[in-house]
Length: 547
Image (cartoon, helix red, strand yellow):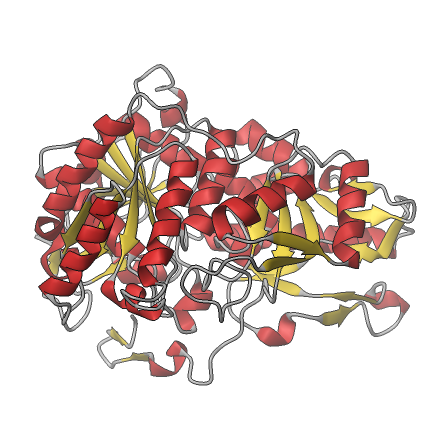
């Protein structure tokens, strides 16, 4: 039996060949596209040939407002998938691909922790199958063709001051947030202000995550708005004749990636958008494929219900036609304390997130992710509070005990699937609602705001987007994940604040409008002592310091 050592705190993990993992889902090992022994791409054609097959039940994992160290949504997603498989269900997990920015920065990898992990974790957290590079190259090719068009006469009459496309790189680098390009004379391009975003924030990544198939991918890439003309008209990627080459660069990236958990549960890891600046879920293709292959599919949306879950419902479910049967809200004792404790705003924060899920016509389950040192009495207080809210809460110990520690949670989720089965999904707003009203609806109903203040630039953006035909798109709110408000200092359940909107950006190819609130940045920076400073390669080739 082959093994892979994950880290010093856990013994080597017996890994099944990826062909055996695929076979568990009913996939012919001959059709998979292996990347070594333990990773494979599954051709998108496997979804197309199963369109008439029934769907399994979809479970969304979200959370209350996180602490700086997070609440363990990914770990819970993995532990729940393992537990469902232990109960005899044909289960699959759908997660996003980790980004190198947080991995080398401060947050660490995106493959879970403890006994609830994806394997091979190092490969997944590092270069994986190259999807991130494909997204970066497609985005940056479009940027190069845009600047090349300016250099050779600018027949489209692009206003260089109104270029909205940014270059991307999958690292944290604050020095690239605002730069100048085209310096050095007439042979080196047209001078203009530019900047970089991190790759998961690229609209190309959002398009990859929401595309239905190859044809839809190409159409969405062509619809990307890269700039505006001097007359205020949008310029698209198709106007630069870039979408064909971009589509070719993403030809392999569109196929979902299959790996496994430490316990052997199949896991699709595909796409990697951030939930505070994009829709924050894995690809629609991977989710839809998993639903055709498994009885129960567990997926995750980034951050809490006010960010990832809302976008999962209002953007991804709308576009992909998904209908989740169960929602799990991850809570922790440390988060309750962080947001004010039992007598302060900690439980009020959890109550708001329960109300947020009910807004979408779903009754959630609360998973209390147990940490070392948590007392039974304190955990029981959270359970009793949830009972008063009419919600079932279960303590889970998957970090320490793997799938066995989440079996009670899995049983609660199966009951929850039956409870939610007859109910149709309800969206937070209709698409025909004006952009300003959509934003106000989310601010008041999900965040607890009294009103929304649009600054001068935001008002101009609203006017421009509605005049150019983008007012009917869903909105993607970009705000701090540290608070229900747009102010990270406001913990608990803030009320009657005013949400500040600074800017609106159209992602026409992805199919939504990004709304920038507060101090959100699309290119993170490194901390004073980044995680990268701890990483070493030993003489035998073993890596140390990888989280």
